[in-house]
Length: 92
Image 1 (cartoon, helix red, strand yellow):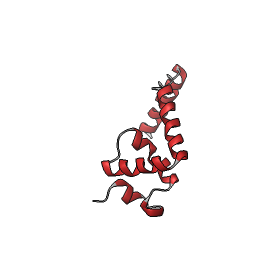
Image 2 (tube, helix red, strand yellow; image 1 turned 45 degrees about the vertical axis):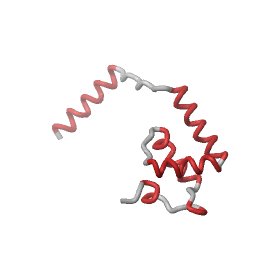
Image 3 (cartoon, rainbow, N blue to C red; image 1 turned 90 degrees about the horizontal axis):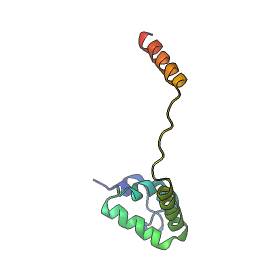
């Protein structure tokens, strides 16, 4: 079975990954979801591309600063509106 990078993307010059594909994979990279082979290819690109390296560092810093963003609680009015909408949906 081909790995994620082979399945999703065509190789760039000399088998590398184009920057746009790196951006699409950054979340998986930061979450540790890439296979060892995918991770090596990703990190090889980072070692050669200052722009992608800066982007990944910016993403790391954003995650560090945000930590976790708690969801905003719904107002009582919004909860009532949702309940009414679902009542109508279930009876319809």
